[in-house]
Amino acid sequence: QKAVAVMTSGGDAPGMNPNVRAIVRTAIAKGCRAYVVMEGYEGLVRGGPEYIKQFSWEDVRGWSSEGGTNIGTARCMEFRERAGRLLGALHLIEAGVDALIVCGGDGSLTGADLFRSEWPSLLQELKDTSKISSEQFTRYQHLNICGTVGSIDNDMSTTDATIGAYSSLDRICRAIDYIEATANSHSRAFVVEVMGRNCGWLALMAGIATSADYILIPEKPSSSREWQDQMCDIVTKHRSRGKRTTIVIVAEGAIANDLTPISPKDVHKVLCDRLKLDTRVTTLGHVQRGGTAVAFDRILATLQGVEAVNAVLESSPDTPSPLIAINENKITRKSLVDSVRLTKSVAEAIHAKDFKKAMSLRDTEFVE
Ligand code: F6P
Image (cartoon, rainbow, N blue to C red; front, side, top):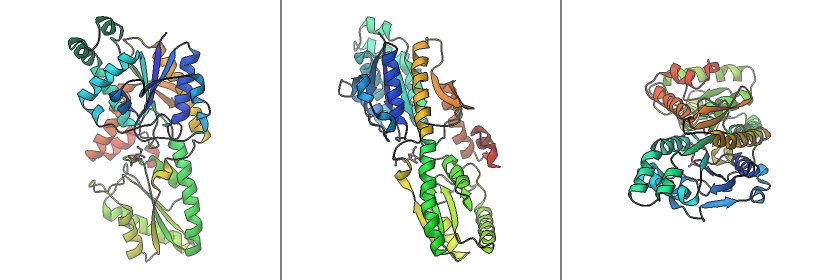
């Protein structure tokens, strides 16, 4: 009987609980033992039954409609070091886990990929230091690992949507709808900062969905002069047509084309000084991440959870570790290494000021 473990890692995202539920129940339905690793990679580093827990069918009852992640998550510094990963390997073997499914964002899946690639040398070290037996060394030769992408940022290459992104987008749109009402009453301008780290997807989609006046995202930067002039022209035009509200959405990673960050305060200053608009700044913060998942994320998380278990059970030492994606409305398997590499190359392209490349790697040509 195989043992399949699941953990959630990095920033929580609505839909992580339905993902864990689907993984636990699919594993049990397929005759495996199901485990959860509590507190993300920190649970792996700590180990023991308190952190690597066997779960039953009933343990995940009702999780489809619960926000956040009930098994905890963390951004673990120790796992970034080899010593932490060595402990993680030991604890997985001690618990008898054959396969690990990690639900997290690009940072967490980069960690998973590193763990996978280092596995043979970690295993060797554990054997050389007599931490594991020769039988364990032979049995756990291959780390069977799989990623499901849970992040509100929708910043992972090779998948159309990450678990949680549409829930967060829904939250942002509702908040902006509320802001519209008060903005309209006072004829005010609002600068709304949204999350997304270095990815502009949430800002861009929220801008389209709420018909914002102007959107600033990291993937399509211009010079400070250009964005300020363009924003002022557009807002002036809208106001001259009788519009009483102005909404500018700023992605938290927004930058100018010399890579200097653009903050909501910068935008506020331009709207006040140049357009004399009564302007307020709203940083939506963690309300964007909280709450229950929208139906799309629950479905995505469930279907991907089932596929993740199928993928680990079908995997062999020669199959590349999979990442479970969605492409054109189909649940697909991608290579974890390639997805992580492509995602990293977006950040590298932005850093090298090759914004065209960044955009094409993000599959966001429609930004044009
Ligand atoms: O990656 C998800 C995310 O919510 C980002 O959008 C944001 O930059 C970051 O996490 C915030 O992290 P924390 O919750 O640790 O402040």
